[in-house]
Amino acid sequence: MRLGFALACALLLTSITVSAEPAPQLRLLSEHVIDGMRGGNLSGLAQCGNDLWTVSDRDDDQIYRLDTANSLWRAEAVVIDVPPVPASGLPWGLRSRAWLASFVRGGDLDFEGITCDNAGNRYVVSESHAAVLQIPPTGPASWLKISPLMIREARASGLLSEFNALFEGLAINPAGDQMWLSAERQSRGLLLIKRKQTVWDCDGGCVLLSEAGKEMQPPQFPKAKAVPRDFSDVSLFNGKLFTLERNAYQICRRDPQTAKVERCWSYAAEVLQDNRRYPQNYGLEEALVVDVDGAWVGVDNNNGARADGEQRPIVWRFAAPDGGWSAKP
Image (cartoon, rainbow, N blue to C red; front, side):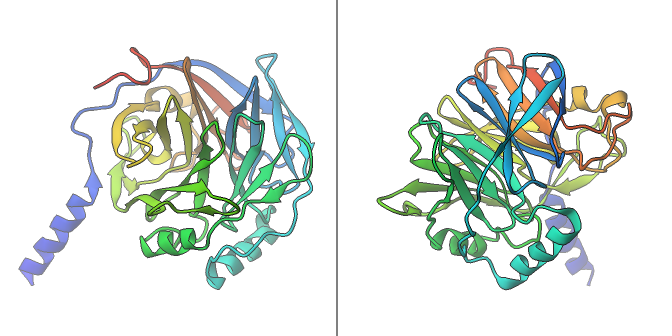
């Protein structure tokens, strides 16, 4: 009995990651409150040419271009006509819970990420349906034809098993023929699919990473504790994949073909200052864009107010780390 208890404790300890060396802190440059998002709940960001775009997980019929001319940003709605969602292979239990939740919170599609390619196509991922909508510069939107093998492989690897913890972000390469999807938590994961003749499919395997367990919240978090590892968005920059790891308050650079982590940077010291804190006991950052000069990080505050009373969505601008995003440890 004692041996079994000791073994269980050992397994629990090995599943909790505690960083031996703190990640370097990113420096906050600016903060932008956003007016005009009908549903609030900013849940993704994309840099498309000179424009920043965003989505709300409460709005099924529009995405937003951000007017960033002033410190206070305005969201300009772009209406989209969304066709019926194709079957993705998710089990009935997950689909039915998502359908019921849509009556309570609004937003059947639960848009959780946005990205774009060099041709100007925008892509939005629906968490509730595990599907990706393509919105071209002109013409109607359409759902990508994704092989059902992706969902089967993901679930066989322990991903996409928890309600409201499915696909939370996506990134596409400039040519528009490779796409990365991030599975949120319990377990978290990264997947890669490639465009074939008519279908997006796995190339040898879809799942690059499936990872369970917990890690400690940063010391700046009040009463820090071990929480599930998660991904809340993903961004592709300069041939590297960057993951937004909300519960750990960090951005990590990863190999795009293996998902192996190369280096991480923390933003905890800036966003966990007293005036910026939210009452939730977990991270709320759900949107990431990495570029040569820094990173945009957006907050899905679930319409809740932070310590200074602000209830609107917020985007933070962080400076690139010393030595740039490609710097070695």
